[in-house]
Length: 156
Image (cartoon, rainbow, N blue to C red; front, side, top):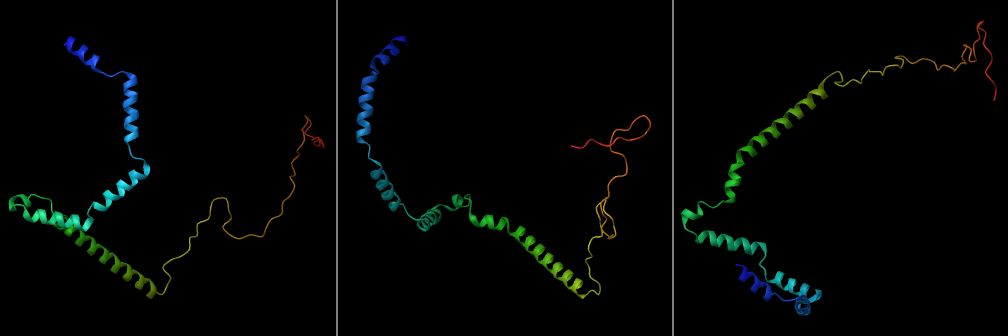
């Protein structure tokens, strides 16, 4: 094993040979314009979606019956959700009929069915009062001495 590793290591190229190989490869690569032209040519050669679907259908028709039965067929998906679609349709139809009935009942009622909320936030009066004027406080604002008399606050 050791002899094999030594022979492989001896066969590896050195760094200068690797740089030369890389430069040769870079010279052979096409530039950006050529890449875009190659891509456009490839896209033109590809068939469109309808052609691909036709090819698929032709291949499925050529398969034996026991193989084609095992393939996932799109019609099975439609059958799978067919019941759900019916239930959803009946539900939407029922909801629409109930909405129309409720609307007609509300229109024919003598009294309005909606009344505005009478909720007032805490701390606000429930009745409309005359606007109050602001008054100055009657309690002393200065320092209160031991005798209970107040000294006026200093003026600035």
